[in-house]
Image 1 (cartoon, rainbow, N blue to C red):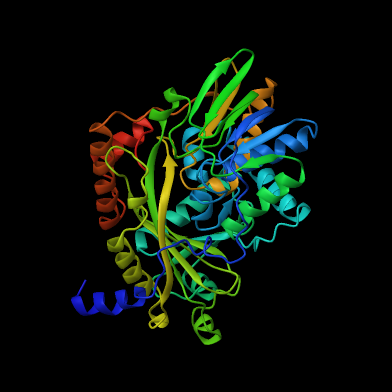
Image 2: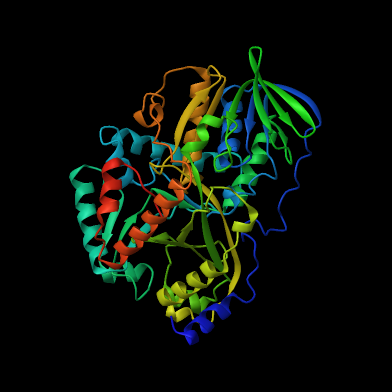
Length: 472
């Protein structure tokens, strides 16, 4: 990148606020008071992100008499649930390709359950009057290299042969650029119904309000410090008190699990995003985007991008950073070198928008596992359930995970608990320094594959055979 181009592109970052656009909202609700003293309940939910919020809400919907308590270490929605791109996908398996490669015999059921889950999210948004800018516009996977266009065509053909292409449309160069006009776009595959766009923080805040309306007792600034078995139930210690619960559901995801044996199954990966200022009518007309779909490109190191309700462009992805040791720390939340890289990529995709400035730049940790989609389990004789490893598609899949955790706690056999995806776990990550070395080598190999028309080296082919690796 030439110095003059770097200066021109990074100048657009000079006023960017180092905070998630979604959380930078004057309408943000006040936090609920912290727990002091002792609480007792039927179900304790640990974590105030989507996973915990959906679990608490559905628990009360299933049994309004059940006493449910939710504790959050900081404020509801402050972490991944308030920092993501706002893509709410039907897929439960981090995309059809990943699901088909891992659970080919169950993929029809998984796709059906995923579509049902997305419908249920849309229904809940309406039922509880959650104002979160929900738009079921779908998503286009775009090709920016000739080999990617060929891969999209081949993949759509495979989907059709397997009867999994319903609601999808293959777009050639003219058709994709008629939807969103970028000189980088060569082809696209539009999933018209399987993805919705929404305001992620407002969804979290709306779910909190819905939980409170049903009688869930919510305590913020109340981290759960320890989990121990107490008689027929469980005890959880917090800074200023204790909670005794018959059952516990853990929605802590990227943060260290209170069930220590679960910790090796996830690692944190930091993802970063920019948000532009609102586009003018002329700027928006220059790129089209009348149908407001979400977009993602088809490289291994991919970008995701979408329009907000006030016509800003969120532009994220590409760099996925794993910190040595796998610790979640605030110091990793911002990475200027990634922001500069993203700004340069943005203006190469949309040169007609040169002069647009970025209003916000932020990052945050997501949890990933070796199969790139959630895993589930129980502990303490079935008194505790957990779900983790969503790998960045948790806006939608966490609701499904909430249903699974509640099924597991009830002990009932359901269509969900019968799934191999639910019954079996991924392989754990190795200890350091092997985890950092393996992830770094995989990231390097993925970048090389992007530079070499998608050709995967021996390391990636070996990881593919083992069902391991790292999804950027």
